[in-house]
Amino acid sequence: MASLPSSQYQLLPAEVSDAAVIHELDTLAFGAEELAQIVFDGHNPASNSLRLEQIRNSLQDPAVTYTKVMVDGKHVAQAQWVLNLDPDWHLKGEPEEKKKARMENAANPEAYGEFFGWLYGVRKRRMGGQKHLLLASLVTHPEYQGRGIGSLLLKEGLAVADKHNIPAWLEASAAGYPLYKKFGFEDVEIFDMDLTKYGGKTVARSVAMVRQPQGKSD
Ligand SMILES: CC(C)(COP(=O)(O)OP(=O)(O)OC[C@H]1O[C@@H](n2cnc3c(N)ncnc32)[C@H](O)[C@@H]1OP(=O)(O)O)[C@@H](O)C(=O)NCCC(=O)NCCS
Image (cartoon, rainbow, N blue to C red):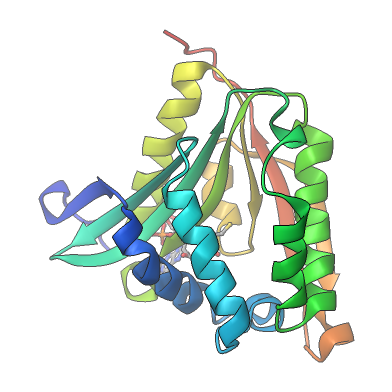
C-alpha cells in the first residue's frame, strides 16, 4: 500500500481528552493477538477502567510524550515515549500497589503477572542505571497499517533519543519487530510465553530491543 503523502496527515501532541480514543485504539489494534486477548481482555470493565486511568496519568506526566496521528480528522495512530534522563528512573516510577491493583483486576491475573513480570523485569535489569528513551506503546489503526504511519512516529520519537545521544528501548510484539529492526533496534532478550497454559493455542514471542546511541548529539 502506498505511503500517505505528508499533506494528508498531522502529527500532534495527544491531550488528556484523547484518553478514551487512545484506549479504544489500543484495544482494537492489539485485539487480534491471542496474547492481548488473554492478558488484557478488552471486555473486562475493571481492567478497562484501570487502564484508562493509567493512560490519563501518562498524558499528564512531564516525562511522557504522547503523539497522535490524525488523517482526515480521524485519530488513526499513537505513540507513547518516556524520556528517562535520570539514570535512577527504576528506583521511582509507579507505586507497586498500583501495579498490583492492575494485576488483580486483570482478566487473567496469572497471565498478566507472567507477561508484565518479564517486561518490567527485563527493562529494569538491562536499563536500570542508564538514561534512555522508552517506547512504551506504538499503535496504528488496522485500516491504516502498512502506509508508513508507524515509521513516521518512530522517526519523530527517535530524533529525541539522538538529540540526547541516549539509547532507545522497547519490548516488541511480533507485529512491531520487523519495523524496529529497520530502525536499528537490536535483540536483547527473547520471551516466549506459552499461552496454552491459559487456554490459548499459541506461543507469543516478545523481544526486548535496544537502539544504541547514534553519536549525533548536538
Ligand atoms: C506495528 C505497527 C504499529 C506498525 O504500524 P504501521 O503504521 O503499519 O507501520 P509502517 O506502515 O510504517 O510500517 C510497517 C512495516 O511493517 C509491515 N506491515 C505492518 N502491517 C502491515 C500491513 N497491514 N500491511 C502491509 N505491511 C504491513 C510492512 O513490512 C512495513 O514495512 P515496509 O515499510 O518495509 O513496507 C502496527 O502494525 C500495529 O499497530 N500493530 C498492532 C499493535 C502492535 O503490535 N504494536 C507494536 C507494539 S511493540
